[in-house]
Image (cartoon, rainbow, N blue to C red; front, side, top):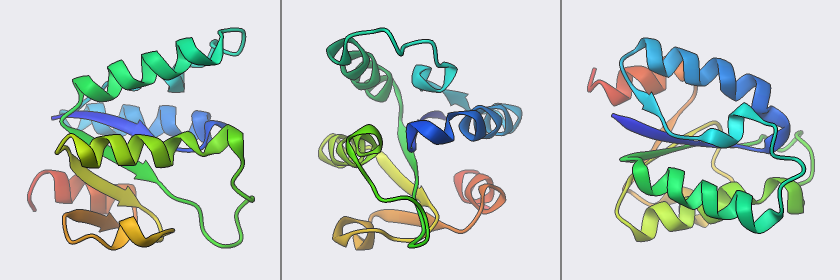
Length: 125
């Protein structure tokens, strides 16, 4: 399955490890943002690349923050937009972590506590 990973940018290093785990499980990760190196890019370039990467994916996996995490700001709110785009385009939707907003309670959204649980859910186990 092709998967787009959505998370706060400051979790990029963690998401590189998640991508490797997903790829070892037989999935393809389309999220180029986790590779970094786009800091000098114009924001519009990053946004367009993210939308292209999301369009290539069958599933969006969003990593949420708990209540003790940092306060969401402009630098980390893109994952909410990505979830909305994925919802509107009929993609499979998964979150790993706690529900953060009303949309995380939709019945079509799958909620997992860990990456291991996510991989099991993606494989139907």
